[in-house]
Length: 125
Image (cartoon, rainbow, N blue to C red; front, side, top):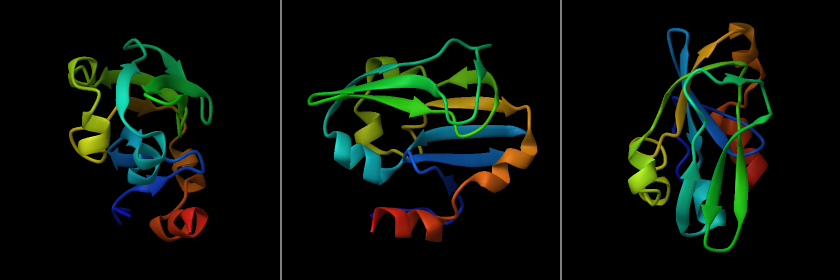
């Protein structure tokens, strides 16, 4: 299972990468394997407010539909338009080309509430 050391994680299987006050968000390798073949991603509009641990996007796979939860509170500043044409990027490259959205943080202190790579590894073990 691929769990990059440079990211933080949620119990709902999202990852977060902090760059300044912008956080890039996606789903983990574990999540994409559990979902199976992903066929559609419903992205939020740019400008939408997110609330920590509330749904912010939806992923449809062949066998299920799953919410993507915002790890942090903020405002959507960018979405990965490439997923509209190629949702399978979430299966193929969940940590790079398969990112879902970027939010500008409202409460940077929330970053400390996310799981470390070690804590996430223990969660999925």
